[in-house]
Image (cartoon, rainbow, N blue to C red; front, side, top):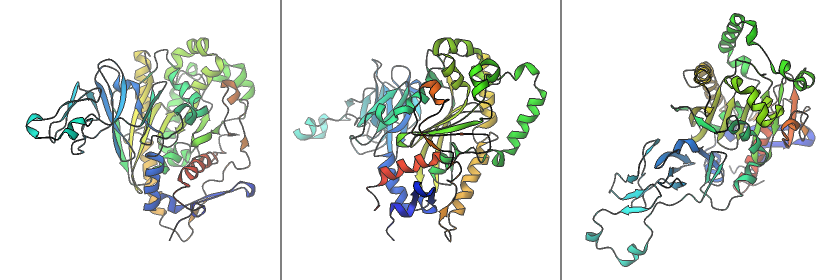
Length: 447
């Protein structure tokens, strides 16, 4: 059966209807098209600049199926290459991160420097090569597009793409909220975690933006928080309402909301408050002086940001950077790090890491709950007696065009927004994902 876009996404705004077909998570043809169109056909997140901070530092990652090597040469220039030897195609750098002036292919010992130049071909003089071979460039192939926004590195296997700034659009202001927490920028706390789950990559995409599951999927974590709150002294519960007249007056009755942007980027957020429970608390005054109270207050809000298709930054229990890598329709690899502002005190860094360990990673109190739910969904997607899923309807009548008084605080201009109490749990921000998905996949399927 030939699939059409309308078989996969039922998007009828005038009727108040939006549904997604289970096949979008299971069909091998859909998955192959996603890899070509989304992960190898446009901008994807590669890593952050601090992963290759010094001369000859490098790290490896993927853009879809394409292995990528990001490295800094001896002069400090950062570049991205396809991580494959031009001789026989073997993967060149095989560790996730390191420092190397030279990379030597383990198959036939061709050698390349940290600028990607070929420095040696084993036994070249004895090789009886033709002149045509000698005229070829034997260096590493640069990634067709590579760009840096505030320390966030993006690349594209496709050469014809919109400029990165245009692709990110208003979502750059969400990355600014992370990068501007320190004058020195951001860094990854040493120690990454890589794990897989047996379900589709879009379940992780959705879950980061899903407030509806929290009380159902994470009861153990909630009980721990309640117990800790009872044990805390009264001076530890200062909130943004006590520190900002604006939030005291304007946020009453508002638990948070969501913003949707062009190209599938989204934010869901909640009011956390300027509280010592957040490691950034020691910088609250300094950040207000440098960036203004509006931007400072937003840095303290709970924020789950998705840069479509593969980057997520979760600033809630702690601060986590996630990179999504689809492997098969029912298999996804996640790489995660604790992300932090450079230069924070030892006490704040210790607090950040302890909170991170609480919630995130396969050993935390939340990630295992989520991945089990993804796998349960993947099993349930076989129930195609009714193919259409109903999980995209909450917030439909609350969604409005443009921003609101809270986004105005940082001159953020989303395409759509929702304001709500803690129980609305908007699902309309998923529409931005799937509308961007449909736009990019249009050439693969009939309308």
